[in-house]
Amino acid sequence: MGHSTIYPTGATVYNPNKAWSGYTVFQAGEEGVVLIDMNGKEVHLWKGLLGFPAKIFPGGYVLGSTGRRDPKFGIQDNVDLVQVDWDGNIVWKYNSYEHIEDPGYEPLWYARQHHDYQREGNPVGYFAPGLEPKVDSGKTLILAHKNIYNPQISDKQLLDDTILEVDWEGNIVWEWAPNEHFDELGFDEAAKNVLFRDPNSRSFGNLGGGVGDWLHINSASYVGPNKFYDAGDERFHPDNVIWDAREANIIAITDKRTGAIVWRIGPDYSLPEVKHIDWIIGQHHAHIIPKGLPGEGNLLVFDNGGWGGYGLPNPSSPFGQKNALRDHSRILEINPVTFEIEWQYTAAEAGFSVPTDSYKFYSPYISSAQRLPNGNTLITEGSNGRLFEVTPEHELVWEYISPFTDSRNTNMVYRSYRVPYAWVPQLETPVEQAIEPIDVTQFRVPGSAPKGSDSVVSVATTLPFVEGAACVATTDEGSSRKVN
Image 1 (spheres, one colour):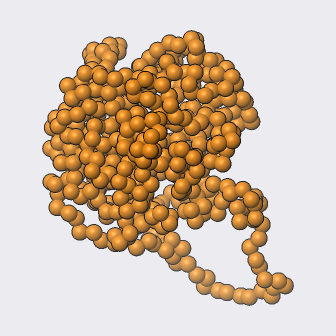
Image 2 (tube, rainbow, N blue to C red):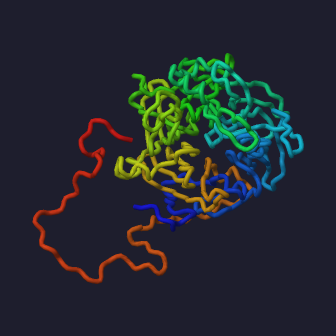
Image 3 (cartoon, rainbow, N blue to C red):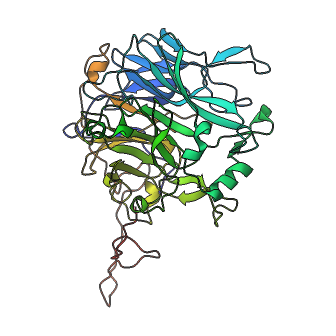
């Protein structure tokens, strides 16, 4: 089907018998953080709060930020990370990473938080049985920014993605900087040369010569309790931190005690041990599925596709930047020890013709995937504001299209989370009403003619028409290699 300029928003599909029902939280354009039920009803809005991402904790607490730095001076720097109650009162705040004096603004302390954070008690920020995040104490893992110079990487200023752990009072108790571990990231000489010349330089307003957003880490979480550590694999110590770098096509685990990178996949997916996975490009929300959920211990990641990586030039990358390219997305669940794909959701599983219609499941940036207790997966196809839930057999059982747009005329949703009704005691459990999928071949907007011809004639045929080869090869033509 083509992409119409007219399409429904809100909840479009809901099967209460197969979905894992609860509330879903996400950033509602520029309005604030919204909480919806399974029928898409907006049950609560924290107006003005910025969720990057928005997370909800037991008791109806929500986390986000109260402001963002002017992009003339910084890239995606949030002023703070706050926890607010149901009534919007700030009950916890961190904003003391760096004191900044931007021209035209009052000097402020900034958290410089971006993209992710976790609260002690839960490794990944979404519901898992017996792993509740603390709401009145505990440490918080925060992904932050710091401007640095490292001549080993480039002679230009770099935007480093530091990972902090702060206590309840806001004291930094652990900090890790990826630029200090450049030799552990697996870049070959071609990638290093590209990085040195241009480390993904971004320039806005008064940034002058720009700053190199060289890794662009977009998720950071604890590994959490898992079967691999229980079996003696120290790389998967529950306190270790797993993170992924969108611009470098890297997913890695940092040993929290030593700071060393002890596990990594990417940036080179031509290596024998990972070649069967194909290239993971521009990925988001890489994390270990928490204990107590189906697939526990496996890596779950939204493999965006789009563009990412550094290396030898090619026709789509004349200077070696963003040198891997793919125009569709995948959800991958990977055993982190054997690197075998345990489950996936691609355009093929969505029922589209591959590769001709693979683009119909595609978000080249942002996005996420959450494993639910019944084995379903909540997927945020972020760039087009589509949230949906599928069963292990890939059946669509819930779908929601965000109606919230921003100043760029996009309804993008960075990430969404599903939580149990019980986490929000301020609300009564809603009445769940099924939403049957619309037959789009018959659906018409008011004033449009229905399907069907007023006048029909028959033409003599020589042979029956059988759909055969298309202009490009498809995966059902007997190829030994599956195209995802």
